[in-house]
Image (cartoon, rainbow, N blue to C red; front, side, top):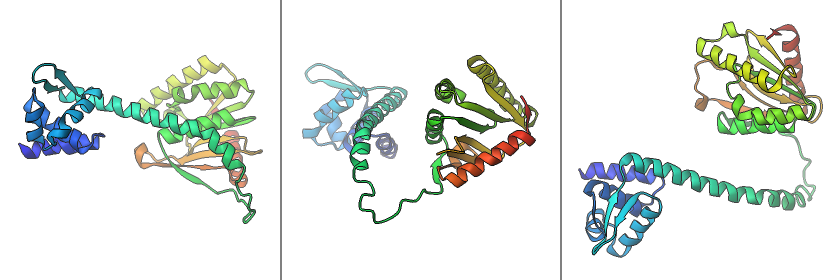
Length: 278
């Protein structure tokens, strides 16, 4: 049984608890309601630390204390503990993100005053920056939509992520940005993706009417978005890889003028000669 307890302990550490917290909670889950002194002997958490550790676990919502002489402590169920740890982790990440974001404008302001002031090297625009597909690529996509000033070219299979980027697309539309969306032909999609695309098209019609032009192509070799290809543009792209899960894919960002213009030209050719009205 000790091996199983240790497995739970290591899992709890992986979910964010320190060694004492994980050991105390794992043994408490095995023992059930018990005294702090008993738990100290069982878990190996020193007697001088056990009450502090139990208080930390209580503040995280992982244990219940029943007052008395002595006080008794009981664990939540494994499901409740798992849910509570997820909530705690989200809150910690949110607080950390708030801290980082609070420094953002200060960094830009201060660093801009000294960036490349020594004049030792001429700044060159990097060719591409590789990013992961998922939350990171979605956030970068949203930035492209928000920062577009004239033209936004979107290449997608079914645009099933519309709900995540719709507000940014609306913001671009309000600024007068011309928006074109190139999608895979419905007949080239499997049934599940065809339904996602149908829902997307209905949502686009409801939110944008005829102001967003959509066309179909049998192949969409490169997915992503291109903003303002003829003036200070930027592009995000990934290659279509059927059957490869998102977490194994990578996307790329580029603000290199030549690359962005080339992508814009290829998109234009695809739009004019290898697509049809949706």
